Length: 414
Image (cartoon, rainbow, N blue to C red; front, side, top):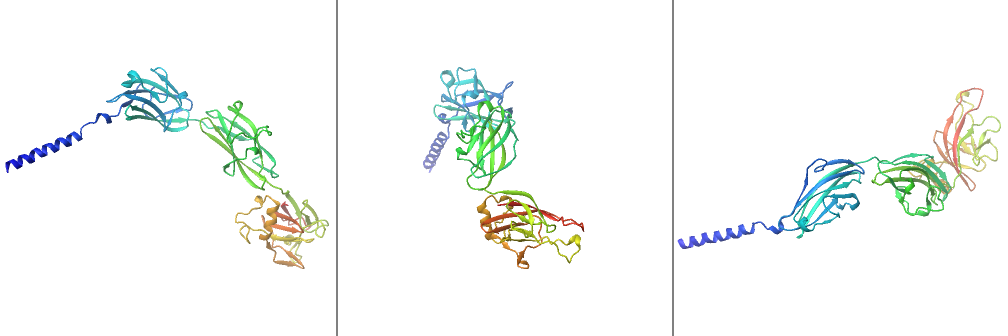
């Protein structure tokens, strides 16, 4: 029995020896050492600098079992461009830096790094040995900067015909960095038809790219007009002009471009029926007529003689001379839920809306008449092959017993 016990003891000792051997150090897996040394003016931890300034680190490296091969300096995961690096204490410079001679065993030198990216970025200093083992030292740098600014020197909204030139004037002031590019977006998407974009007065030379590099002469700021050729399809378009500087900061200005084949008459006076020559409206030119004039498309329904003079205006209209008038109300009878008079931008659109019109239900003799008009009511008028859309911007009531000065103010598109 003693022999068997001795055998078991020796077997246990052997197994322990094998276990300890397997857990021993493998010098081939030891990584090189890299340290950022402290000192006056040196960065070893998180720091803040302004755009274009530099920060300095003192990097030391020490091999373990294997010779060191390279030092790489990354901003996040991207190598820092060599023109942003200044090495002191070593001849030459590169990124990655090839370590040769004595530097494969140990090195100690400083590097100044120019900060050119706004925001918080990790800078990683990576030492790799000949066997691919790596060690990294990291600092987080916050780079501050002022973005460019913009002043709109022209109207923020323009109405033009389809495929017509429209110019918007901008005064752009640089912030911390020089201005670099201008980009034009239509309804939030970068414009791709470069033949419709022009910088300043060079309307014979369209953008070569979008974004377009800003000319060197304008990099410190400028006041220029940027031309666009409006879309061929009528509609309301949001154009965004985005100016970006060399630090990646940007400023944008949004404008509205209305491409339309419509005629717009604004603030048209439409008197109620009263003195001769009033009560009717010629929608083709916005001029008042008599209520029975052959040029009129609509007429006012005048007064209710059964009511007091101060409050007897009916505030109702009807079509004349073959005109039919209907209501257009968003979300009603198939009209778009987001319909608005302002967004009507083409003749074809008005004609298509006719099918969504709601007919008048009241009568005066043989005439179909509206309900009592309310501010912002929208109506569509069909006269033969002509279509008009109108909105009642104002309803002005007088209480004088001696006049018929009550009136509407209309906007008309046709």
